[in-house]
Image 1 (cartoon, one colour):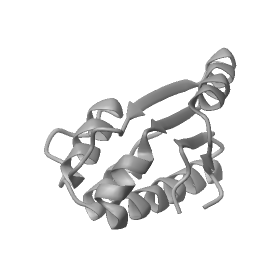
Image 2 (tube, rainbow, N blue to C red; image 1 turned 120 degrees about the horizontal axis):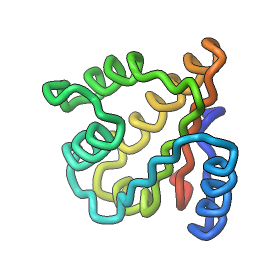
Image 3 (cartoon, one colour; image 1 turned 135 degrees about the vertical axis):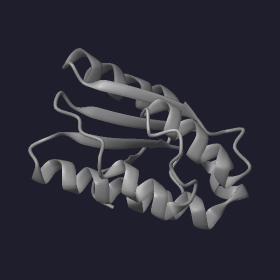
Image 4 (spheres, rainbow, N blue to C red; image 1 turned 135 degrees about the horizontal axis):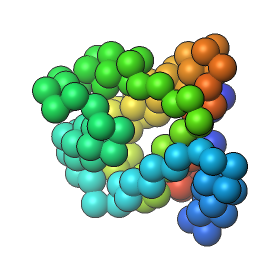
Length: 123
């Protein structure tokens, strides 16, 4: 994953997020520490990115909706506490980051800067 940046410390992630904001990018910060089900990810990310209310809450639905999200001024999705979600739902947590990375790559091909910040890193 080339556009998913892992951070050991939340304070460092927050500093990078502040730098991105100072450059005019939108930063969405999501606390995943309490997520225990796949739907937690879909609900929170969907609301933060203003995905259509009826999007399918599964990996294919997430991928399809993200493909429609544009970020002309730049966008970073910052997850904190992601290790807790990964412990509860390891396959979904890993696959979601891969989908987000693919979205970032596609955005870069359109000349848009989209990135993902994750704290702490997951294995």
